[in-house]
Image 1 (cartoon, rainbow, N blue to C red):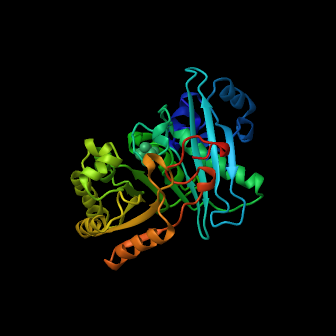
Image 2 (tube, protein in one colour):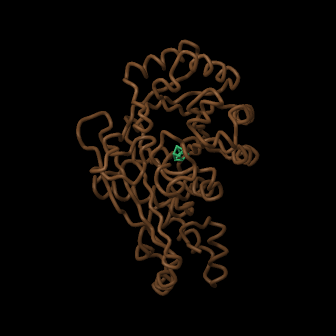
Image 3 (cartoon, rainbow, N blue to C red):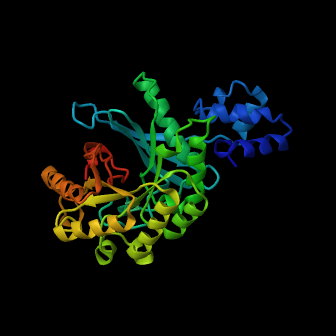
Amino acid sequence: MFINELTIEELKDFFRKINEPSYRAEQTFLRIHKHLALNIDEFTELPRKLREWFSENHYFPTLNLDYYEAINDKSDDRGTQKFIFEYKDQKSSKNRIFESVWLVSEKRRTACISSQSGCSLNCTFCATAKIPFKGNLSTWQILQQVYYMIRFRNQTENTKERLTNIVFMGMGEPFYNYDNVIKAAKILNHPLGLNIGSRHITISTAGVIPSIERFIAEKQPFNLAISLNHPFNEGRMSLMDINQRYPLKELLKVVKKYTEVYKKNITFEYILIPDVNMTKEHINELVKIAKYIKYCKFNLIPLNTNFNNWRTPEEEEVLAFQKELRKNGILAFYRGSPGKKINAACGMLALQKKEMLI
Ligand code: SF4
């Protein structure tokens, strides 16, 4: 058990059991989730003996930064930073390696974080699918990606900018690690923590229907995004193996239910691959889907990898695709490929360092 993944209530229980006053729970929660402590010595409000005891019993694990890269030139994605983290469990000697990305735009500072080390799914356009799957990340490992990035930026860039958004779009399928992901999102949203608004936290899934149903039944307040990528069942199957288990028609039914319950847009992520999912026929079918769902928007993402001899669409092709969707009244956004130069863009997270550019 680790103290950096306990809720306030769980911390109260914990301190009660070790005969410490309950106010220690709030002190500890603030120190970890607001002041972003990465070392037990920073818990100055706790008695030294207690800190030593935490340390001896490994109650407060931390990640190691294995690799770091930033884009500093004057390009549009200036400021994108990529982090590769590692954690070796002392008891099981299992190690977890995973990536996070800090994205900068005019108004937003977004932490794109991982929920698993590798991924058990096999989306054919995604580099994460090509590396070994090592398992789910625990709640503290998810949280600490965010805390580490903020601390790192504050120290190295000498900045106090505020993180505005969190997206679970790094490595892994968040809904195959549902409990840890939702717990992390709740802690990130907590008023005594970073207090990131629930509307600024987005969880993206390739389409794990039972978890989407659970998310709806629990009325989780966070945004949901669906990695759609193809409007036809067969075509989607060829891109995403999860479609065999959860076919498109069933997925769209549950997405519709989400929009009816939440009365807000669902986001469809759509990786654009020339000759695969960008023809007139695909656009027509997407229009049908959008009419069926009613409340939805599309994020258009040009392919960033080069598997299967596929190519990245030219900017004009992306804009033409966007224009066609918009002509049909569909909200479609295109925000470029921030991080591509350092293997940090969408679909590129495969623990690769600069010298290994895909
Ligand atoms: S796109 Fe997401 S779900 Fe698909 S293989 Fe990559 S990380 Fe996994």
